[in-house]
Image 1 (tube, helix red, strand yellow):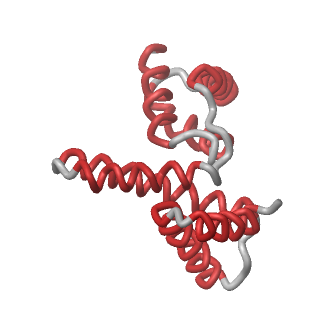
Image 2 (cartoon, helix red, strand yellow):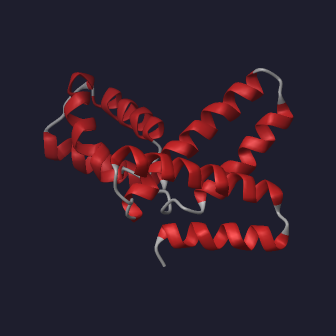
Length: 150
């Protein structure tokens, strides 16, 4: 089942079960997908829907952090619940061990020897992990690994 179809089915199921919080999150996600489709003037495939879900999930993580810093726990909890719904549309995330193995392999592939080579490393690494790992985590792990080489 395509992700667009899954989104539509999940919206219908949430309506039937009267799960308003989930329904709101799914509708917000659907509107984001429709906005991107309108902007690009074409229907998104699964990769495009995953890209929108990744962006939305990243926005939710940022909002959760901001709300928690501001002492707004109720708003942070609402964003966290929406994040759980969005994560259903994302592919499984890479484990830290798997990510570190990929970083090490990519370092040897591009010949990175120090932190100055981080740009080359990230340029090669990010397309491989897109949708499978959070960019900030990848950046942090790559930086730590390159610093350990120096």
